[in-house]
Length: 503
Image (cartoon, rainbow, N blue to C red; front, side, top):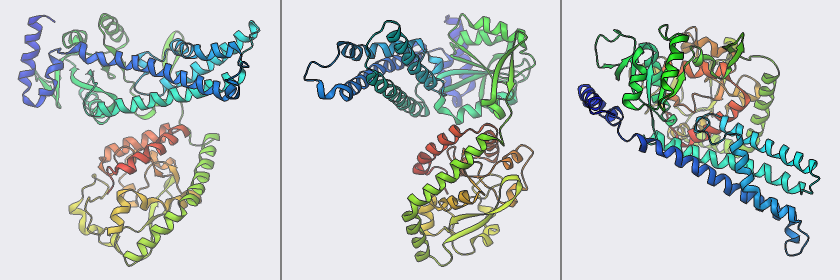
């Protein structure tokens, strides 16, 4: 970077004031190689651990197949050779499946899909080669080693990813990003990236249409680094890692094509945000039609076989949960009854699927008739603009405070799931007063059953603003899958133990 450019960057940073001092190292282009060096270390660690788990899998399979004959001479030479070569073969299969490419790492499920593809590919290759050359390969060895290595590989990669996400949430291992588009889109995307800091995108500034900021150096808390026609220059000047382009009429197909060409000489990746991403992210696919890569939006599924499967899973899991947790349920019921006057359960009317009311069950965590005095506490509301919440609600009993801290007062809703009025995973059920304030988008949540847990549970719960709640609920309704439900159930355990947003 030339001295003149550095002076210009430093001057721009100084003009932004102390509030933006965190951005100064990136805006001066300092430490670029050091900032990106962790990626290569991460990939090298993946290769090493893949080889280690492959060796462990081969050893386990070998001992399970020939354990009783190791001391003798009955072990085939081909089986021993295969066990010794298995780590090298596995790493080779992972290379062929491109599981070490950075664009597939750190976020999303593509990395794990490719690990599974590598296992299937290797199984097919071993079967084909042994049949073609009439090799005597121990089938028990292969059938044991391949599933085991696939599971262990996914496991250690998940652990590495969780560790990376934790470090990124603390501000480490970031990759710089510049947002390109109009002001409203830049603001929304910046807020989303700030909420999901574990993705590792550090927004250092934005590029806006010429004249939209009237010569200001900042917009909505972000440094304005240039206009829409200066994106490539900004990337080179500040050595940016990622360019996120939002839908803009100025950036049509030809302009985006030229921008992609300009960025080919840099190390920056180009991300395009379709206008429908927020509503239909996983349902967006690229289809080549008439030589053009057109975006196809699949319909959301509200009926059909997958919904039946969800219903069966919900009721089966709820029945199992009631049986397993029966001693806990009885103990909590006894604690509520013995420590405060009133019934054990609190029945509250909520609005369910298609706007039909139902009575949701909870362990009573407040004093008797607490709902009748709620209106007198509205001035102390610490929730969002629609939902009433208080961190230190005077109506909560001592036992109730503990139950609410770990959300175990919600366990009786398993009976709601059994009765069919709720689902294990879904939008949070709201009361009539809150539903009456729904906008058009929010009414989409009434197309499905409310859930005992959901995206709201693993995304902040009571700490969420109303707009965030709308966005999260609509995202779930539009994009649900059974695997998505299982992921939410898994994350709910961590959210409950942390107790964040629970009050």
